[in-house]
Length: 616
Image (cartoon, rainbow, N blue to C red; front, side, top):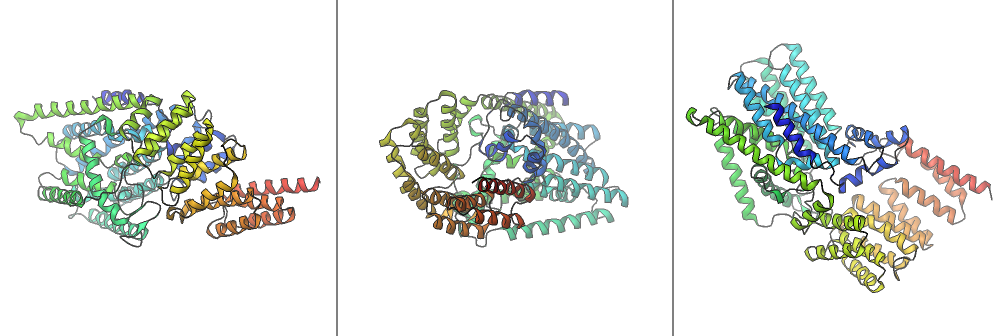
């Protein structure tokens, strides 16, 4: 039966391996296309920006796909599916070890419950995006390492033999650390171990090592909660400019979103799943928040009261909350992503499988058959979802139809129309329809302006540009807006964008600079760099130096350093450029993990300037 479950899961997922690349794929993996040396590979792995630790293990796993990228992305998705199946095998082991430790059922029943839980988990459509979005390997690989640690922890602990107990704790921490190098939220695995120790291990108060494990894991939880409190915004109600909502808004919204996750996990709906969720907004109807809180409280109280007869419900709920502790709490991430449920739902599937074996004997066969029919229903939705995912243009049209307010979905479809049909007009029509749902989306306005430049209608170009400038001081921020400035500059310099000139680009950049969302963080850095480029284009060199001075106070950026040196050269001061580059090469501030790579690039650029100066 296990073989059938895993084979059918693979068959369903393989329908989607020809799917497209998405926003985070492009921002995190585009450098694969240019890797042709060990030095470039090393830099790619060590200089990741997807998380605070850089996620080098996850990036390392993408290196085999560098040859032929991005055409090799289907192979990368197939590898993701393989990791998903491996995680299913590990959860099969975890389930058996959890049930064995609790001594609730006989060993044959433990095996059956474990298989049922994993079968349901494997085929849940809500989890499909974790495997079908290439870069979400970071999430599944993180879980892979964490589960190895949890399996070894459960295997070695519980014997009350000191060496075995120490090995169990060591492996849990080791593989938690490895998991964090794939994605940081692997940090929650010791908290999941705490859930097992408290609710499943019946004798933890009677044995020395069991009590010690419980207390150490509780201490770990306290330290983790303190770290989260430290990482939280300083005020509960202050609006975070980059996200446009407060911590209170986020926490209130997560109450409702967690219920949405649970609903979509156990009541599958084909049109509800996909890669785009930037249209999810904060919850402003507080009656929904109060109802959600009351619902969780009621379920938790019931689960607590029946924990001695049926601990799995409380175990499943606490596991679910623990797995959401990093990405669905105080850290100001985007509100909604399906992959956040990848590990969180497992213990609830275990609880649902265990329910079947608490049914009265005369109804047992009916309950067992119903469970497997339910798994088949989930598999059917997964198969259909993956089939849509694997047809790139059909999928893009489907997601815009289901998510008309998602600027990411609309921009992806417009880009797909231009890529496959070569039609900027059709792309423009798509964006215009999208802007009916999001009139403040700067990224769609920017992309529409670029397509208008391709069409060549001067009147349309002028109208769209003026609209973009007018919206810039208050519009919604995404990185695509500042990214679009590079293409817009190229069009203007080439004379391919109607009557737009560099002075008008300067006006747009200044309008964007008045947007509070651009006042801090990476957005400020990117926009400041654009301002400096624009000033240099206009020969306003002193002003450009002033902007770069302010930028250097925040962070040393390789591109900004090169730009300043180029400005010195344009001013006829090559010696200043060479001296400035030497100062930066002696600095320890450039680069996050791999400064030698950037210093070598600066050295090469300095040598080029020196050679050019010598040749005059």
